Length: 110
Image (cartoon, one colour):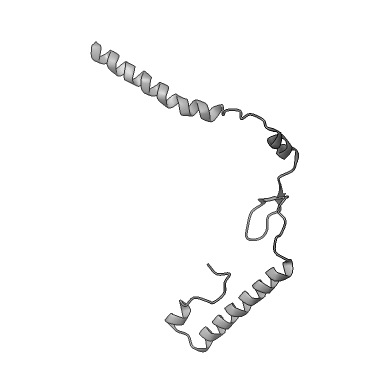
């Protein structure tokens, strides 16, 4: 009989311990409202960008401003395309395994 009560006690104790994370997941704590948090809630933070061919809809922050001029980005992309085309042309001229797996000099490739 004592063994039954010990097993019952440990079962109830385990159930109580495991119910705490479940309870916290269902009813999260309410954080205190500060003035900055109230102002941040008033401003729209993101808008849904429509889906494109290769991706789904994503949230884009409305407050994000481009820090780099558009012309500089276009120049970097054009330079990257030129380097990739040169690498492809050199492979077509003399195909080889070492040339296929060589890294390009483009700074946009990680």
